[in-house]
Image (cartoon, rainbow, N blue to C red):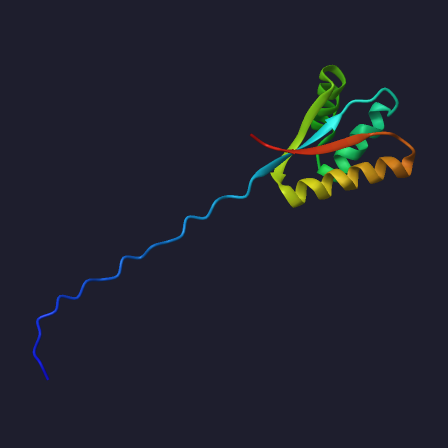
Amino acid sequence: MSNRNTALEPKSATKPKLKRPKLYKVILINDDYTPREFVILVLRAVFRMSEETGYRVMMTAHKMGTSVVVVCARDIAETKATEAVDLAKEAGFPLLFTTEPEE
């Protein structure tokens, strides 16, 4: 057995940097056929908005052409947009929600 002088150095703890998932916007697109009351109903049912908040989002889309409804993870955004569009189709309205990455 040899008697060596070795210096023990602690291992440096490296944590991998995790990136946050990219966020996506759900966008309400204005149309001339869907009644305002129905748009507010969808915003309340699918996105859990209050009547006042739903009204403001709907009016923004009415005046500007589009309105951001919510910003969330991709899978949630796509699920909510699909649910809202399906609800409108069942009622016979051309209401449209889309998703796009937030910048």
